[in-house]
Length: 77
Image 1: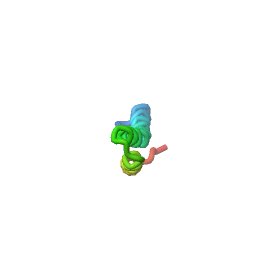
Image 2: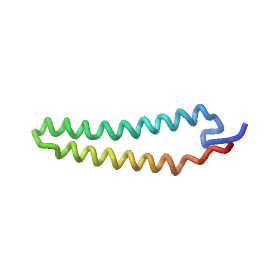
Image 3: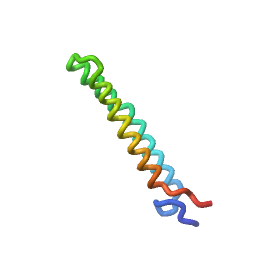
């Protein structure tokens, strides 16, 4: 069995690791804006914190996606 990935050759473990990373990326895009809208509702502001939460969520998601693609070596066949 070849060592196809950084997790020691176990392709199932590699799949779960990538899946969890993608789930974390999608959660970052959703959670930060929701927190911002919640703060907006508590402080009775317009959409300032919602927009800020969107920008922070998008930045962290893109950063995580770049980190995921740079650290993930291509699989050998």
